Image (cartoon, rainbow, N blue to C red):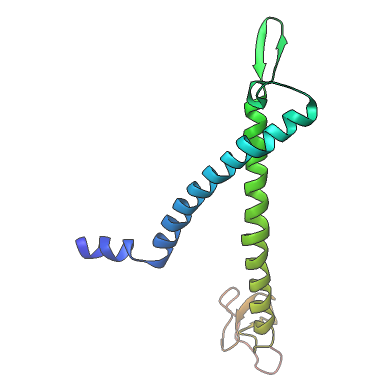
Length: 139
């Protein structure tokens, strides 16, 4: 049982996921601080307010709605999403596209059954869907 657990923990996907979560949490802290200490004071200065941006609020029917802290969190989320998109998603998509470009030149591994038009292995003698015996000349 311990061997299976050790094998599970040391698999690449689990370790990569753990590292990603730790780095993501640290990055989130950096971005939260950047937004709180740099962006929101700038917005506050531009808007002419002398209060902290996180304290912005409005009153409606006797209730106080504080939207400044929500805007801080929203700005942080947008910055993190942009960084992930531009520095993780786009490069991986580009690498996948380049890898798939090379696969298009390979010989196909499937063919269509001439009777039911299902995709089957190119070496099959019978269709696994309609069980028809395949004529090698037509397939």
